[in-house]
Image (cartoon, rainbow, N blue to C red; front, side, top):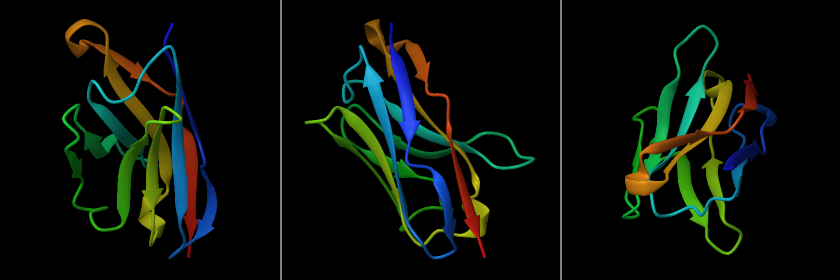
Length: 118
């Protein structure tokens, strides 16, 4: 059974940094698409960044230049480095990864809260 678990969330002042991690059980990052989503208060879940199986990363315009998504292959952990945080980055952040035959299965973590104060 695949399990994804996020960590690294917390409270930080605007301008600060946090590094989110997504660890996996029974799953190897890198073959299929991986996505960081976030759900801001009162808003729908949105894509923050996507990392394709080919290693191409795309970011939402709102985080471009501030966030960085990458995989630590040695530790089989997906990360989201968040710098220059803004109050509007406050959200629950989720990692999601495709898997299984032809990457048709979707796996989700339970989320980690990020709170950015002014």
